Length: 291
Image (cartoon, rainbow, N blue to C red; front, side):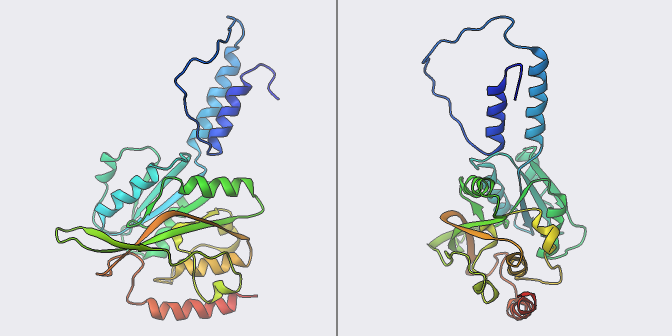
């Protein structure tokens, strides 16, 4: 619909906004001719403003809660920055743990927003803080001790953009079992894949088979089903999936695109002394949600 040219440039901008990745072949393959009056500065300036607008509005917001694990947080953040899909923002929320703000003077990327809780509020409230600050069309999650593989966001966002009848999609993840390495760190001793299931609208009320880092969903889902239940100290993701399943379609992409960690000293974010009690609470709540 462009009258004055530059439609190719506009197309490239749109392709980047959708998450497509291009590459440059460093060989001269043809000659093109240019006239001095063939480009109109007015239209060029308009498209520059359009490109700036696209780049300043992320398509995806990645929510990373953190608590007292600065070394692991660095790995999580770097795994997002290494994505082949680049139109995202990262929102790191420190749940009143040790100060990690210095990390973001070293990892200086304008796509990162750092928020600090003055008092500890728990994982559900911490994620909700990130969601309230999010500007993206889609929400993704990553705990501070886990990582994305480089194509994680590209696979999920591309699928959702091409299938608008779905608002939620998820992939698979490796579970990496870690043990202390004796010098203050951890080493992976084995990997397995405990969850790789197509979505079952009945089974979700009996077991959570979707690790939180595997999911990307439209932010608008929260307007319908609400946010994470802040009264829950664990299993808050399962509770949210159950509520979403009553309103939205889920799609499983059977590809391994991320990795969550389990450590023998139980310092991973997902472990809690109250997990069994909360499991019973969430399962009972699910029976009330279920239609």
